[in-house]
Image (cartoon, rainbow, N blue to C red; front, top):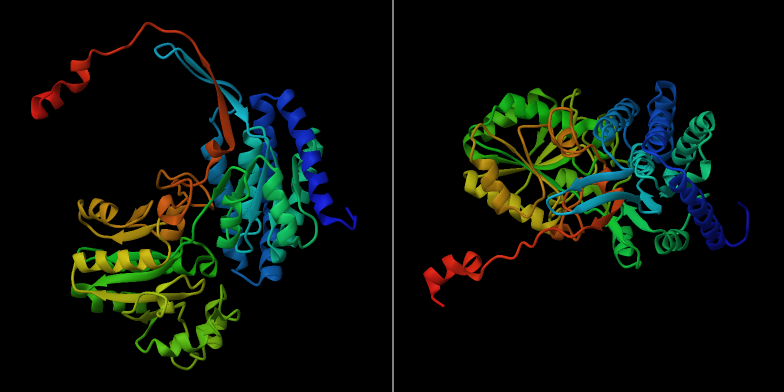
Length: 467
């Protein structure tokens, strides 16, 4: 579209999406919804296209690295397809004679999805697949730097649609680099908004008047207690921290190490490529410029980041990330927040109780509701942490980035958007997944009366408090 009114463009795109969705639903079947989802999934997973999307994403955003984006595009999409393979999203999905209620799956309509530059291929693909699986149309609003990747992805999806005769208007995007005004209009006129990324966009989504699924900020803190397998913990933290150059909201930003094993764990970090920096000023002086993260350090390969921080001659040549000692938490201590780089803040705790206190303070400063991690060989401490921290997830003895958003070795749904509950100002505390893209109509039939006597409800209360 080349009209002089970008708002009118958005309205026309949504109108076409609405017409396509209406026909998709009217002629729908489980097979039709499944085929559309499979077409979108294969569009990003086909190896040559996956590589091109990964290369384009790194080239145009300057964030992450190609091999890890290829892995992310493949595994996140494959995991999602596993999750939805047997999901029933068309027709009768539940029928309970005991309650007399029959549930009928219904699409939501047109989904508006705002996606970040950190995952310009995997995140829109995830949203598109979920939307199609449930009979919806979707319009994507990518970040400016993510536009080339998103355009290419949609081109691949439309090519797959052409093979099957699927209406391409089911999957569209706001053209060009977009703007706050065009994104705002999309938020206002779609039927459901899904927002990942900028917390400004999250706030706008929740105040748009349209039902919204938006997620909070990450700032993962991970405890290493005195019972942990230090070698395994160090390996997992390294793999997670360095994956795609720490672009993930689930990347560790702090590790809180119990004093009894501090030196041993520092040695294991060094063995796995984590260079310990004891003078935090050497990092903070260049990781932030005028209060903003240094773009030459954000989501860069280790050598480029280390050079941007002026530390090339101060760390081993094989350094893969920096582990920076600090004790401060809060607005005056930027290392206690999200860093979107291969920089891991290290705190020393007196004991496990102190580690929980430090982790809680970090989460309350930034990242409340998202997730925390724990490396331990005890059975009771995960529950202790779950009850003490304002968090939706406690990841135990796993590489955090790979575990939080779904893994083939845990039961979390595959997703790139993690709800943070009321702690993070979100409407959901689960991983965003296919069920959020569907609603139901309930058929309600009369059943035999199920009215209890008063003493069935209040008998134990009366025994204790009297009538």
